[in-house]
Image 1 (tube, helix red, strand yellow):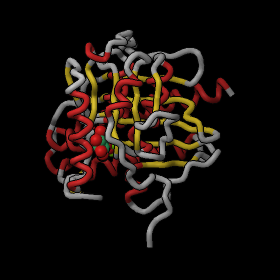
Image 2: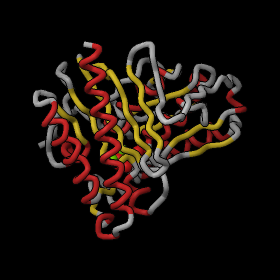
Image 3: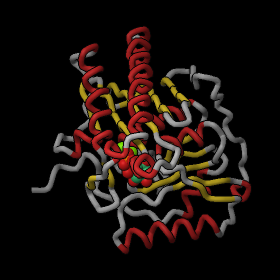
Image 4: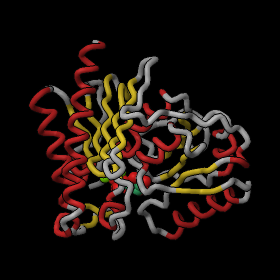
Length: 282
Ligand SMILES: O=P(O)(O)O[C@H]1[C@H](O)[C@@H](O)[C@H](O)[C@@H](O)[C@@H]1O
Ligand SMILES: [Mg+2]
Ligand SMILES: [Mg+2]
């Protein structure tokens, strides 16, 4: 199975790079950044998101015809978001669509691969920085092209930088919760709070030791599937925002180094968005 998995992972890296090239070219063409909206007026999608997801799925289908998919834009188009034991590609064609639309320079292609409901490897290609982050769920972990993982050993949360995002839900109660968590964390006080505008890149920043923790409520499984392996294989931990094991379908995540995770979890004002795998409402 090892060689088989490596073969699949090599394909994921190749197709992520190809997808990244499409994203870079699309950035120079305003038409390809024309905005449509999904769950709210600030939940953006472009024809490039859809085109890149199509490209990835078609490329994988040719090589691995029995594999299944959970893709952000396919789910938006009505496909079910159900993780089975079958080999499944979990795809976010453009993580950071808002960044893409505004030319804010952090945009990633994120691909996680799951078997038996466990993510086996993750590939995050931060395509404007041209950084490829990969990790496989075995002892080995690697970040290609010299992007070495330098995991943070800081255990004093007051010396940390914490990454988070504001998401795309602007309901008053949700915004209140987001600010309540942010206020608690700033008041620790931490050195700073940052956000790249993409969950996948934020998780790679944890894995690289640039930030000590990243948390968000409202992410989706395609935002974090790949990053989850990259963080864990770098030596980090994943947790639910109220402590306990993370559930990638729950839309809640903390990814952190060992020293700060418990402190961060204490400060988060948690809430529970509708799960990714919830049956559709009629
Ligand atoms: O929609 P994309 O750009 O794929 O993903 C983004 C989420 O929608 C947003 O809620 C989140 O804050 C951001 O980090 C994420 O990457
Ligand atoms: Mg995303
Ligand atoms: Mg996306």
